[in-house]
Length: 105
Image (cartoon, rainbow, N blue to C red):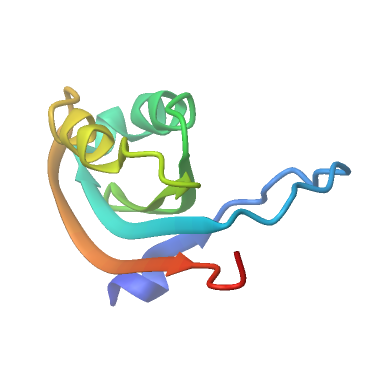
């Protein structure tokens, strides 16, 4: 079974607040491979980190995770390093990165 077939999307709570559009944002997408018996605890820990969202969980302990920064915040690299060092994380693989600046300002 392929990784995309194994992943189960998570339901995000719908926010009723509208957030202002940032002038700059940065998003990093990655696969976090975990020890399967530690996956649930890691998901809870990851969801507590600023800018981090777990989008899907695979049966084998693979997680689809994003780290987002707004308006020039510079914590993504430190956050990814923290994720790498969490007990139960086997590896992280960067699979997507996008940086955008609103040139209208």
